[in-house]
Length: 426
Image 1 (spheres, rainbow, N blue to C red):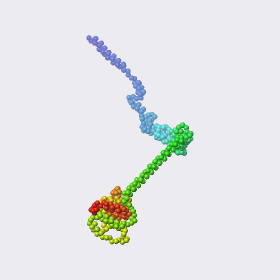
Image 2 (spheres, helix red, strand yellow):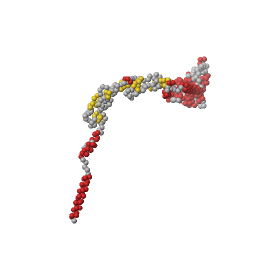
Image 3 (cartoon, rainbow, N blue to C red):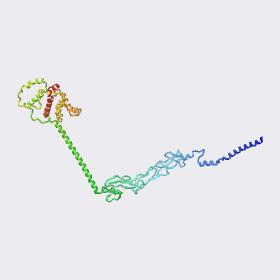
Image 4 (cartoon, rainbow, N blue to C red):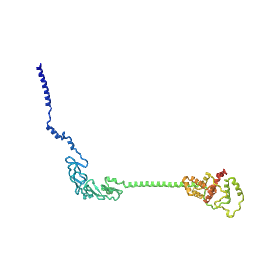
């Protein structure tokens, strides 16, 4: 039983050995030389993973990368050039100043400076700014000249046009003056005014229409302007006439409203009989008791007056004065019968000061209210002396006897229905 099992055991061992040997044969090891070659070609290996990043080094502003690409160096300033690169990141670049006639305008890494530009006198160029180690020569043109092809180094200077008939645009650095031409002339491409009869092509667009058409249009324009002026003059005349008419109407209204107060010089004096009659009319306003006391005086025949006393003075002062009642209607009656043009003279003669007049005019803008207030103030200031006779006397002094009579008549008419009503207010 054991002999047949032995070959089976050996067989299993042999199978295991064969399988192990087959797997080891299929794995091919990589030679060492090939690995080294790959590292040399890639430029990096397990020990140096950042070697590629060193090739992409960037320098800050004002510095440049060293030719060996190992570190950064400072640039040379304007007016200098680079003589030698820096040896390390902490060392300075060797820079030298530019020689006379050369320049560098900015920070640089140039090994030599640029040569300064020479202004071309054959093109009428002049030196505006001389060359310096930091700036090149600036060339330009003389006064009253402009540049042709100014962007080029070989620009040419030309004289500006004089423009005898006027200038549309002045001469500038890069452009000639634009001249103004007279009528029937056009501006050529050479900036010269030429007659319109010699124009060709697009130049004829600058010329106006024919003379006949131009004269016709100018005639129409002249007629239009003349018509406008005539219309304006007519409107102004109508306005002036209307204004004068309005003023005349207003003046007539004022005159008609005060037709009863006609200012006439008193050529003849008032007779005694008429004065007595007015005194009797005013006495109607007095109470009965005063009438009785005055009857004996009035009843007795008056003694014959001498020849010199037949005519009384302007202001007749009766023996009994009538006090002005405290009634606004009475005051308004006086206001209505005194001309507005003589009102200030009237109240000044009554005794009001200019200060009172100005104050009342400021407080009362309406003329009628101001006149009433002035008369009321005078009555308050005068007290019992504010009488009808005083007002009549002042009006007679102003040669307004008609107004005086009108005031007395108005007062009598206003008090005639109630003869004793005025006494109640006294």
